[in-house]
Length: 204
Image (cartoon, rainbow, N blue to C red; front, side):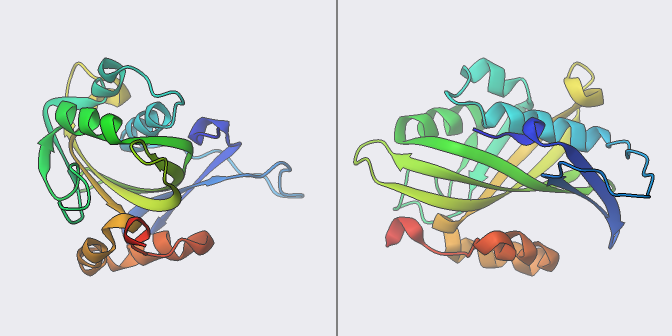
């Protein structure tokens, strides 16, 4: 399993007022060019810490996950509620992860790209993974996007930032992904990258 911390470099740049960080698999430095390592923002640090935790296999205990979230944080995974009990409902974070664990397992979850909106304390994350429906054993590869809304928490890690609202758009929620792209058109690159298409894999 590969998580964000297994990659060699984090490359950051400014683009349309967003801070974009790509996790690159680069084994050799560029020749004849000196580059100073960018200083990651506190939001990026907090987001990568959460994603590192979520990518652990087997999954860590729930309290380990909850340390990244504010006490009143909620989760919304966009999609049709009739497809899965964790879709289309705004849930308290503990309820969401408990329902998710009762229905799905995962393999090889990787987080490959981060976009940080410093002004609005939001981080977008693109990830991929192989998921297994526990009751049937059906498995599929999925591309997904997180939208993490951060709130200041003086007791937390990452300079006090914790996730206050956790939203997920995935291939299985293809019908809802359109609303994400309407609000943030530049995110279409997340699903077009590396062959990730917005497809209703769970419906197929």
